[in-house]
Image 1 (cartoon, rainbow, N blue to C red):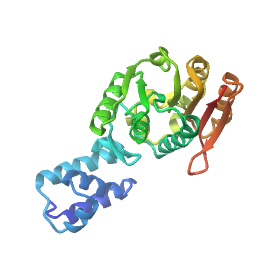
Image 2 (image 1 turned 90 degrees about the vertical axis):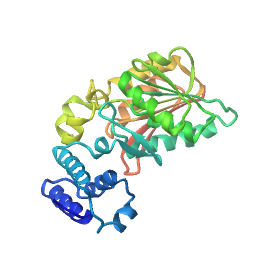
Image 3 (image 1 turned 90 degrees about the horizontal axis):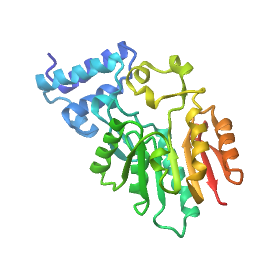
Length: 285
């Protein structure tokens, strides 16, 4: 039995390294179990750790060694400066998706400078990070989020309530739940990994994150093709469509939307790492 916090942390760090997992996870899980900030943990290193706390901590370490992502162990991930609850029914939010939100806000301002109640739809919302973040950053926007999975929508509702975002929820397949009206902005981070690429994923992604939110048919392009076919009848003018994409899918997805919106400006936008990561379709006429 390890009596002190620093002993528990040292053992866990070594155990993670031995099992080819990232050492900092030990500190993050210990902070979670002890409900301490990083600074508090450092200050309390020579404080005792109870047997119950230690057993809980070690069980989480063992789960992580087996491959379970830390976000599913702690139950949350930070996105756009806020903590969002996550579980195995939703993807873990990625930093690249934060860039989709940031870029959308920059593009919406000049497009709708004279409009306050911009109508926004977030298709396939998962934990709700895109739609909720946009609503909290732009409170005048009217935001609706959709998902095929009711379990995912339940998680998005939980996040909206805890973060104070007044948004609407619709369950259904792709654009079907939003087909009752026209929209100023439509955003989506759909499944875009080809089934053939499954073997390239880490075990923590493949074995724990929901496959319905990861994989798509037609080399991962199926849902982009469908969106390009379904959205023309649903968009206002001016309008904006923003999509996260796989880094090799840019030219093909760009072509889908240029064909669907011949007069629109369709851009491929790189992420902070210089990879093609977003498509924006600006509709002016």
